[in-house]
Structure formats: structure tokens, C-alpha cells
Length: 330
Image 1 (cartoon, helix red, strand yellow):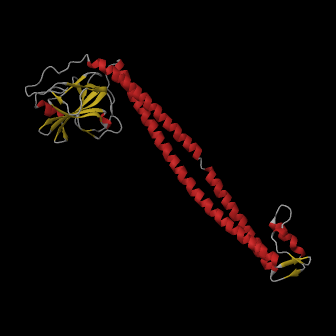
Image 2 (image 1 turned 135 degrees about the vertical axis):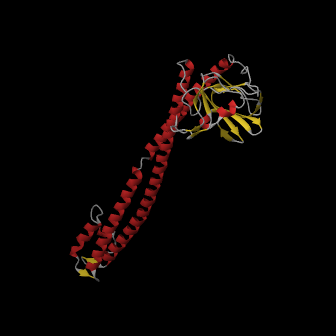
Image 3 (image 1 turned 60 degrees about the vertical axis):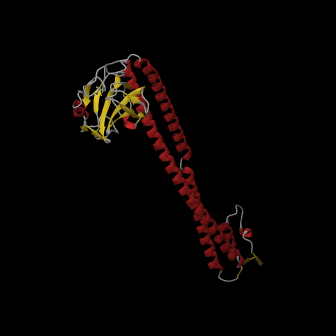
């Protein structure tokens, strides 16, 4: 709920902006971490493939060398048997060139031509296997893990900075709240005949029931309370006497207070200003007692009080409930 252009409104706008900045930074971090995890998975798969191809290439190279040795052992050139693979190598250790240099073979033992074909085929197989393995290792190196990790580190730093900025402003607002509280009436001043009080002074800006349009992302489609547009820093008062059961941050409610009034009835107060919760869990409060300060924490578009009435834990429309107890909301 928008209010007049005051320093409090500027603080609300700044808080909302910093919360949005933090949420975006956190979303960026989740995205960067997911990309890093995916990159690591891709790299591991590529590494496993490369290692397997390395094994196959080594096997293929062994077969090629054995085939070459068999061919050379069956060949005799210049009257001397050639039994060493190394002896068939020319400059540059080119096996195929070495094999080609044996055209001068004068005496043959067995099907030398067939052995040569096998040796050449196995050599080609080995070369291809080694090329596939080399390409697989290039794929491993191509996964930009360092870049992905750097993106995660940068995103984490952005989250840390955004969180620090938000906490800094929250601390300043909380400090200012202390001074505001000193100016507020400590009680509502007047109760209904049934002993109930208006929790805040202002007009109703949103009612209990379904929401055709959500005011901000993340809120429920069904509005469980009644919104009372009030000035930032205005007082929030206990609807009637009871025991505080909850007092602190509560998701989209922002800063929140819940009071148990007995007989299954409880009331809730949401979007309280930073530092504006003035009660503690377990504390007994009187009807109309000052319990908090209006703010815009949680899923809120401006300063207001989200007021809930619950019966046996189920939210009901606060307007007729309070009217039946002599209090007109808004």
C-alpha cells in the first residue's frame, strides 16, 4: 500500500529494492551453480569416455605392433631375417614407411603379402583409435570448468554484497524504529464493550478472499487477512488480551506477531517494520496494547498492516468477526 512521500516511504522503497536485488543475486547464484554442476557432469562423462578410448587405442596399438612383428618375422631381406620391429623403422619411426621399404624381400616364409595387409590394416585401426582418444581428451579440456567456477564465485560475491547492503539498511531502519516507538501511544486508548480494539488506524486496502490478481509474486491466491493501509511507523495494537505465540520473520508475511486469545481464537499481524516487533513469544499482552510498528516487510508493496483472525487455526474474515465485537476495521 503506497503512502505519502516521506523518509519512511523512501526507506520502504529502498528495502524493497534491496530485497529484489538479493533475490536476483540468489537466482543468479542458483543458475551458476546448476551450470557448474552440469559442466562437471559433462566433463566426467567425457573423461570416462576418453579413458575408455585410451584403453582401446592401447589395445589397438598392441595388436598393430604384434601384426607388424609377425610380418617382419616372416620376411627375410638381403639374406638376413628381420625380427625386430625397430629394425623396420626408417628415419622418423614411420612403421608404414618401414614396411614399404621391404619391397626388396627376396625370400618369403608363409603368406607374407597377407601378413603385410593385416599389419597395415591394424596400423590404420590403431591410428584411428588414437585419434578418437585424442579428440575425446580435447572434449574434456573444452568444458569451461574454470569459467563456470568463476561465475559461481562472482554470483556468491554478489549475494554476499546484496545481503550486506540489505542488512545494513535493515539495521539503520531498526535503529530509527526505536525513536519512532517513543512517540507512539502505548495503548489504543479505548476498547469496545467486549474488550476488543482496532489493531491499526487506516483504511482497508485489500479484503479477505480470493485474489484475482496477485499484488506481488509469491503470495497466496487466497488472501487470508484484511489489509489496513497505515502510515509507515504507525502503531499496531493487540486486538484483545492474550499470549504471544510467535514474534519474528515468517516468509511472505515478513515480520510477524501471532497472539493466542484462548478458546481457539488467535490474531496475526504481518509486514511489521524492521526492528518494530515490541513483544516476545510467551509474553502476556493486554487488549489494545502497543505490540509492533507498521512497516512493509515480506511480500508487500508498501506500508500496511495485514491483520488475520484465526479460529482453531483457520483464517476467517476479520471484518465481520471484529464488527461482532464492537470494532469497525478501516
